[in-house]
Image (cartoon, rainbow, N blue to C red; front, side):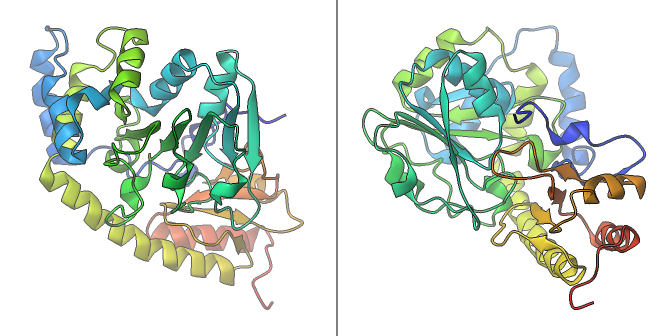
Length: 340
């Protein structure tokens, strides 16, 4: 059995170097914090979503009736599980486990499509009769990008694409967020990772207007707080979107350096990650994650993801200092360097 409700925050014990959580930074940037602080004066009124919905509409060139604001991506998955009645639901793994957990909690049976390395989905692998397909892009924890997801979309099928890390790919070339022409497509996004807003719980989904209306009817009133709405309006403006793209370019450089260092340190790194994390494995060493904790380093366990094992772990991409500390930690726990 896999613990589908286990997430990286459970690993991030205070005092450890946190490489288990994929949030960039420990706090929002100062310009965003300033907007949120100024927004405290609005808390006496009920949240007004109009500006935030308009910001999403402009960001992805979608009609407002195809936008639903949510209390993070997690609420989006719960709403979908409550509203949809799939006959054959398929979750692609290894991938973020919360969508499957939400479906099962709502009483749905779920089939798992478990991909083998290099973990890239071929649309032909999805059963023809699947009327609900859930997949991440980029996928967590592998970081791979699937470039043929549009082929999955057809009348009578809902395809849910989790794009929580889409803006970690410079230019977002594989994002389907603007594709309102694809039947049954649902794209789920959040501000959590890029802008260090895990505690604010704010995101949105893009879907056909009829489905959005059904989801809205199932959603509590005022689901997104006033501060969450301010964050959406702020972060989806042209300047922050450009800043996110520049950050993504920097992450790509750091990821390449980290992958090279880990490979040299004797770690097997899953190829093709375009996300701010790497999936790692030391063959024959299921103890590495616990051993790194003893060295003061928290990485995310892999065995809660269907398709992975206790030998797998995920590390966030950080800077040179964190990279050097992780490599030294691996040396201290006895991982033999490549060629050693």
